[in-house]
Length: 310
Image 1: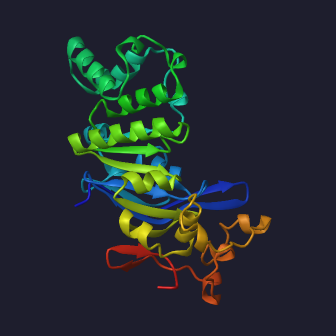
Image 2: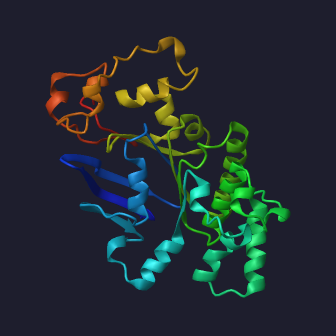
């Protein structure tokens, strides 16, 4: 049984008279052995999924199952265990770190709240964790504003890992960093994941990172998963037209064979109201059935795709 499952999740936001289905019929499973990537353009609903997993918002329909139990029906002790088992790293480390606390205190805080350790035990764990992530001993008495962006993100990751969670949710954790820092942090995360048998749920739009580190990928478009497969299969043979567009957007990826996509009008940008496939206006393979009918997410062997072509 997967450690964490989303079952038929639906989350709707209302903006004046506009109804936005940010997450629709969302199903996904993450286990401790997974480096699972959720990809898609900005505004596709990826961060909403992270907030649902963290219980920051509640869906109108559906369930999130953790170790066989609905997370909205957990008792006090079970809820504490859940928060210890699921950690989050946000895109902007500066906004997630208390500017009035020193680095050591920031990383130590979860241990003081959730663990019954002595001061010396906490100090040993904090120093070891910071060292693992490349934070020099001289930095632990500094404040967040005294660190670089890469150093702050390492501190944010250290704080998330200090309780040894079973799954780490990483919401665009590397987008603000340069390429060399991204590679360094990814390598460290991979080593930590392997040593601790920790699952990672990576939310990103950077397909180069996805290809390099993940073993499973789900592609999200305007609230819906349109394709799910192993990373190898998805990059080797993308099935959904939207996935093909994403992969063709990677610099140098199948450059000779790219198909020129139709321009998006202002009306087409507001695609949440479309009854059928929300990629209809941009799709080179569109058919009449796609306009008013929503395709189901079909199982095709070891992968899934939401398209009438299959």
